[in-house]
Amino acid sequence: MRCPSCGADNPGGAGACSYCGSHLPLPAAGEDRVAAFERIRRSPQFEKRNSPERHARLPKYQAIHKAFLYGFFAIFVGATLFMFVMMIGVSGAFGFLGFRAGGGMGGAFGIIPLVMSLVPLAMAVGGVFLFLHLRKKMETIETAPVEAVPVIVVDKRTAVSGGSGDSSARTSYFVTCETEDGERREYPVWDGNLYGRMADDDAGILYLRADHALDFDRVAP
Image 1 (cartoon, rainbow, N blue to C red):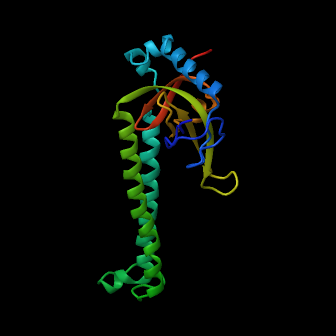
Image 2: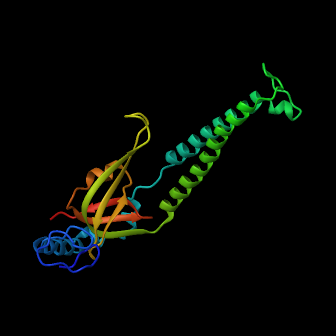
Image 3: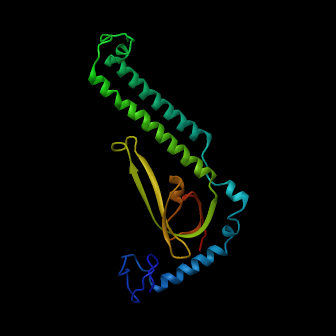
């Protein structure tokens, strides 16, 4: 039996590949898999997969998403730069340069506040780079061509990042699908709604843009 992951030949009836350890489907499962892809290709969903009407229903970034992105980073970068300037003032660097800031320290030079001012400056620079990265990612997802791929859902998972406990935590969604050539690949999912509509062993059309799963049309048995 040929392994769908690495292509190695294995003895008939083996449960896992002796070379890469990947799971090997039983012969009956392989027959069901072929029938599932034939069912997808005969379906109305497959026939309409590239129609302008279907592509128009794909999820996309709304104006509120972009406004939130721009607004959040503008406030974040502005706040960190303000902290940087304030700490420079406290250090007395303005007085050292010929200016005097109001306050108790005046023009007295303080090395500790000056060094500490590098923290908000680094945060501001990091915020700018993160903003540019996210904006480029959004533009790529918006402009990349759409791929409509017949797949069978193999697995799903979530990943929680950031925050402490339930505070400010962010959940990312992922789905692993198998294509007709036997390849399995994991894709980041657009949102939790799409993630909830997909289940293991579902067969249908997966809509991809820049390797992100945007939508899924399930083909019922």
